[in-house]
Amino acid sequence: MTAQRVLILANEMVSERATRGVPKYVRDQVLGAEEVRVVTSMLTTRLESWASDTDAAASSASDRMRAIVSRIETAGQHTIQGTVGDEDPLQAIADALAPFPADALILATHTGEARHRRERRLREKARTRFDLPTTEMLIDGAGSVVSVRADEHV
Image 1 (tube, one colour):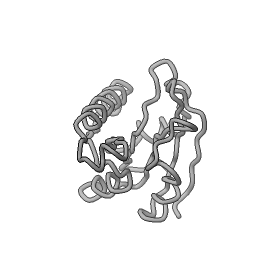
Image 2 (tube, one colour):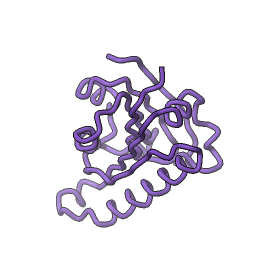
Image 3 (cartoon, helix red, strand yellow):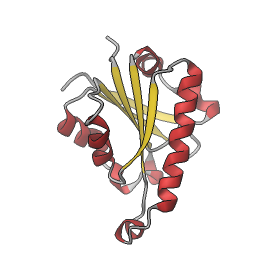
């Protein structure tokens, strides 16, 4: 069953050429939903976070969000909105869920060495905290989908 409201936390973006690497069920979930929201975390370093120097991270997150929303709209999902979220991905998800009670959560995060410090165990933490069916797409530095893990409602 396709979720009616899907929230996507996009810390990484699938490259244009690798879009076909997104599993069909993920595309169907996004394109078949009544509404989709995209939230992009500000990926700050420890120093940037400590110094409250988030301008560059906010700008990067905003660019990423606009590109993802545009790409999803072009694919046919026209009831989509996006926002830049907190530097803590769990807080970004919580903030996005307050006005948008999603039925499913998709996490697009980094893999391997590119994995951001706040992305460690994110899928497990999100499942526990938000009690939503969660799909995690690990995306490498070239924008290719390396792996996908999905689950049913917890």
